[in-house]
Length: 229
Image (cartoon, rainbow, N blue to C red):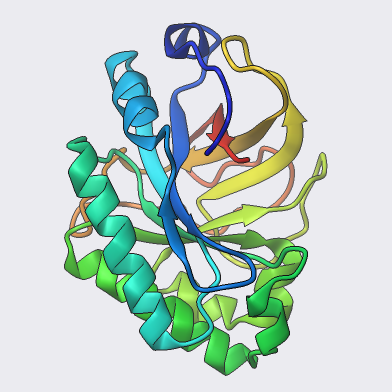
């Protein structure tokens, strides 16, 4: 459960153009899949307020088989919500306290295969697949260059300026932001729109390589929020 009280009209009036909303998650210490209690309510309300929406699923998949199961579960949750996506469908890949993924100690090659299995399943369902991870996770735990050629990259690096060397279309630069209409801290992101907002896998256009603080490669940026626990 995201556990936040949100007035989506105020969020839009505050200038947020998009939100990436968690549709579900896998437990850190066992392979149990869950849908966020507020997901359907939040994504419908955000769309009604004129906010463009994408989704993410918090993964702890340690094998390609588990990744496919997560993707199938997440796709079902999104379809059950009955709302079309404007932005990509992300796999959130990170560790946590007691994380079974961390304990698995996957190689870069194995982790890349797990991510590919999830993302390919999402794209076969008609969505544009993306990956969310920290700058350091991209560097140390996966083949980020190869993945960026196939999927949309959302990179987290909490700093005023990032030196991430890979390609990405969205940068999460803070976890302690404040947005009118949302209680508590909010993750803040810059979306580099170098084409059009579209979640359709055949028409989505991402950004070229981006470097530096709020530096845009041929497009514009907007500050917006993603919602975490």
